[in-house]
Length: 278
View (cartoon, rainbow, N blue to C red):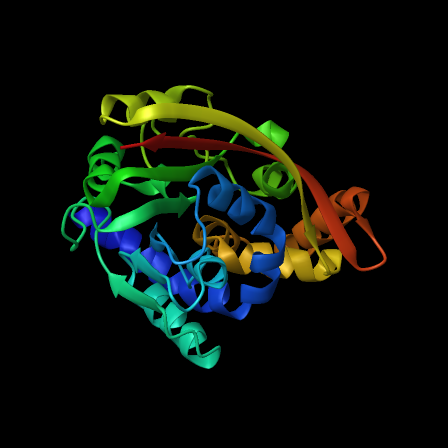
C-alpha cells in the first residue's frame, strides 16, 4: 500500500541517525533487551528471530547470548536499516547473525524454524498486528516463545513527553487515529495481550517493566539525538524558523535538566512486555 511505502521511506530517512547513535541507543534500551531475552527463554545454541530489528538490535545482543553455535536472524521492512545492521554485524565479526528485508506479516521462513521470536518496539507500527503475531507463531517451534516490548502510557515515559510537551507549544500537535501505527498504540494494558491470545498463542502473559533509560550523554546531545531519530520531530522542526528552533531547543534543554547530572541522563520508564507460547 502507498501508506506503507511512505512509512518505509520515512524510516529509511531516519536510518542513518539510528546507525550514528547506535551505542547510545544500545545503552538506553539494554534493560528492555534483557527482559525480552528472559521472557522468550533464549539461551545458548538457540535459533532466534528478531522482527523490526532496525540497525541490528536486539539481534546483535541476542547473538552474544546464543553464542556461535546458535543463530540469530534480524528482519526489517526498511532496506536502509537492514544494511546498517549488516555493517555492524560485519564490523564486529558476528558470523552467526544475519539480516534480511522482510515484511512482518509475510516472513520468508518455513514453519517451526526458530526457538524464539522477539520484537522490541516494532509491533506498534505493524499494519496488521494480529497477522504479524500469527506469523511469529507460525515460524516458532512447538514449545517456543514469542516476546514483544511496547511503550506504556506516554505520561509514564518522560524520555518522550519531556520533549514533546515543549515541541507542542511551538508546533500544533497531531493526535493519531485510533488503531493507526504510533509509538503508544498499545500503551493500554491488555490490548496487545488480547491480540496475542486471539492470534492463537498459549501461556500468554503481560508484564509491566519499570526501569531507567540511562545514557552517558549531555542534555544538549540528547536533544540532538531525539531530534535526529524521530521523523515526526524532524518534520515539525522543518516548519519553524531558526529563531523558533533556537528558543524551542533552549526550552527543551531546560526541561531535560531535571533528569541529568554530570553528563549522564536518566529517565524513569515503563514498558509492557507481552509474551506467548506455541
